Length: 332
Ligand SMILES: NC(=O)c1ccc[n+]([C@@H]2O[C@H](COP(=O)([O-])OP(=O)(O)OC[C@H]3O[C@@H](n4cnc5c(N)ncnc54)[C@H](OP(=O)(O)O)[C@@H]3O)[C@@H](O)[C@H]2O)c1
Image (cartoon, rainbow, N blue to C red; front, side, top):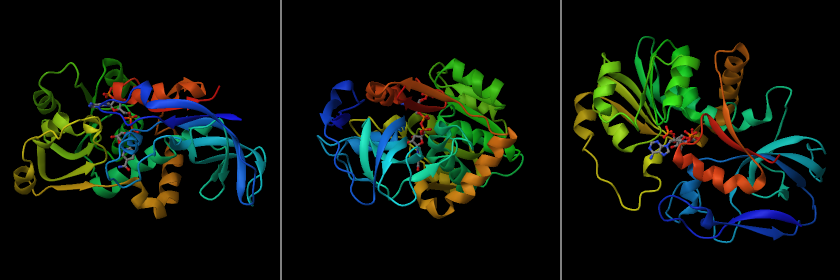
């Protein structure tokens, strides 16, 4: 028997602990092609909020009474699948469960000698690849351009800003806490950072730190923050729609300014993307990120919760801005 966390009810607005339930389930037999895993570290990610509702999206909703699924690193206890042996650490989409039997298809062996295991959920994993492909493939930052990133102190944002610096850009971050602003500027070398929670005129604050306008906007949050940035884009600007976290818990559709005239007049490009669009190029992204991490050009940090039972609390913390860098939950 093992512990499993299931979706108990669909949240209305910000998720609460009541939307989750911990139950005890049996561990099935290890049939051909499967592995028995012991959970090591789980990733909690904003996109999982979308799966908690039953609205149509690019990925199917979680079912009520079924386990929450998310990115995780686990250790193989027993294997009945080629290519996996007891003791291996694997990365994959796994249920929120302490011990689990899962199909080995889709699991990838990861090596803690190459990087700390948590990095495969962050800088060398999905968030890092999101930053890499979104910024470079859509944003195409050029030396000397001004890049603005919202959600700047989170898992994706800190990588976006640093890659833009590596490409010789002036980088401005927007985040919701003074300690995050300090971290971006003092530890990661951002040129400026704005605390949107204490700044009552975001557009004015942006104008002050972007005297030459905005060439690339990496949008992690949407809403009023993005309205303020988009009003200041330059001719030929690129706007990368990566996430809209400020709207994920909205219970009604907010109406913002009509931005099409700005996009038209500035001949700007605005493009959304899902990181899996780039799946065939993940090895390229992994290699570049690993080299920058190895050379010290890319720094990274995690916020870590400890204990399986902390998973729901950690997930909710994403919407309260409690994380700096990648939010993970370690079993110990
Ligand atoms: N397109 C893709 O394939 C893809 C892949 C990965 C992630 N994403 C998206 O990218 C964004 C960042 O993801 P992440 O994993 O790096 O998360 P994260 O930034 O590590 O964590 C979420 C952060 O969002 C900020 N936030 C929460 N509520 C907010 C609000 N109402 N307004 C403004 N900011 C708010 C908080 O920071 P503050 O303290 O600054 O408020 C919080 O720390 C998310 O929107 C996510 O859905 C997209």
